Image 1 (cartoon, rainbow, N blue to C red):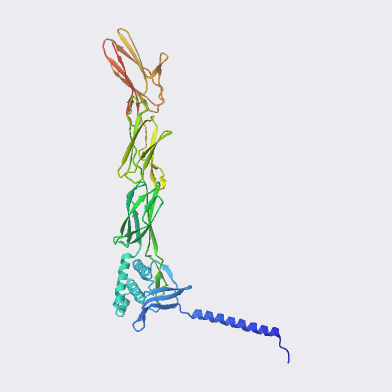
Image 2 (spheres, rainbow, N blue to C red; image 1 turned 120 degrees about the vertical axis):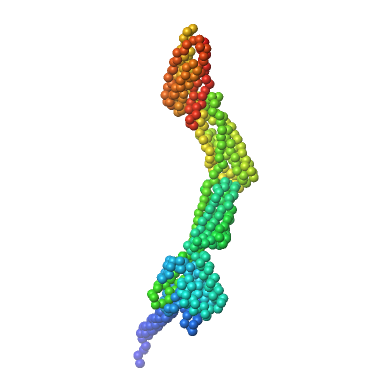
Length: 467
């Protein structure tokens, strides 16, 4: 007898194990292929076990997904693949939206009663009247009542949804306003909870509830400067469904799509109170009128301050918080042509807000009246009058050069008259008049400068009495 070969025995054992493993893999693959792709879930068989009313379970990928059939007179498919559709075959877009709402709201039913009601409602929405009537003879009243409620709800709440947010006022920091949201679906108002989000410079409730008319209101409070932003968001019924392909010989299986998201945005920038001013433009001010600035802080819970800017200078006026409007005036001399503006700030719990421009900025319009020079020469019979916009210097008349940027004018009235304009940048001319003595008349000479509003600012008049 020969001795056993250990190497040969090891090879035989390895071959046996390999064959066993291959057989196990083949068995597993065959078992997977034999598993059903569609099984019944919560629901009931009716009509002699020929019609299943309820939810099926379809094996998609690695999980089981609830699905419903919407043409129960055909046999169920053996395999199911779902695709997102905005319109189901042979159905209108409106009917598809009803089905989408019912599936999204109630498709995940776990009890037989609810699953049966969903199935009945879907077929009514799909227009399968014969199947709906046949099933009604078998299903209990509680299922039919629930199905009718689902259909009514879908007609009221199906998409597409329209969400709007409105902020009718632009309150300043420390003030409040009342906003509104409206939620509509299918042309009807819808009750629901809308989430509110906002920028850091406004305080608002985290959510608002709309009533059956689709309207809700909320209070918002400005707490800082800059542009305020408020957005409204809500998850709503989708307008699409996930459905299997229609081949005309088997049932179409449907399941819900993820809920849609609707969003609306609104914003505002608080508009500061108006800066008001007044000043009198006379020959006394000589181009530097006394200007009175008045600012009124609105009623609010935050102290306020306004900073005036004029030329290279600034001035701050503080106003206390009050339940009523608070005003303060300040007066100072400001040169002609100076731009005057202001910014508001409000002291919130976190400090002074960012500046907010005050409407009413202006430019001081009060140029100084030009000088007037006059020479009057006469004897017992005749006289000569010479006048010009200018000055006497070293015993001579020096015509004035108009560097103001404004139009100037020399006005002569009385025994002789005339009006002589001097454009900006030009040099004045000397105007001479012959007069006769003995008339005992007068002549007045006056210089003026045109303001930006078209009116004139005149200086002191010079009067000559003719003997």
